[in-house]
Image 1 (tube, rainbow, N blue to C red):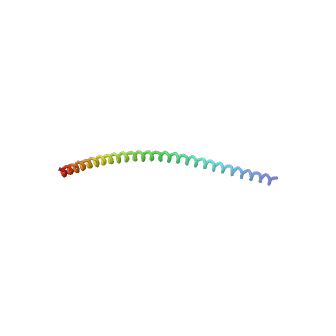
Image 2: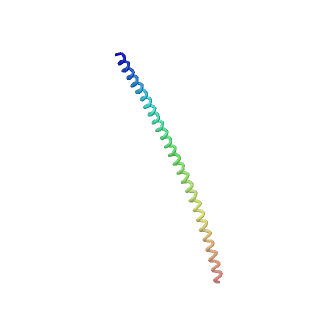
Image 3: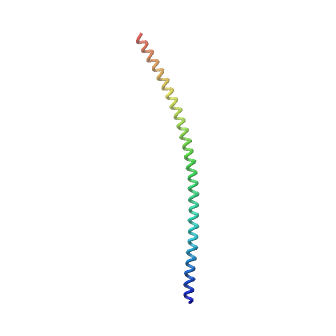
Length: 96
């Protein structure tokens, strides 16, 4: 009888030990999941800020390039107009 009781107590203590270890593992997994969720949230915020900053910088660069292009087109049109005027004057002189 004593051996049966000892076997039952041994089996019960093994079951309790495994239950206690499984609770620790579950808590560790829960903590890891929360930490991962927090890290993901922080990374998403940083990515959003970086994307917004890049978009602002791209918009500024585009605006600057558009101004430079407009200035060059205006200058080119003016130079072309002056060239056409000189050519017309030369043609008029040659016809006379």
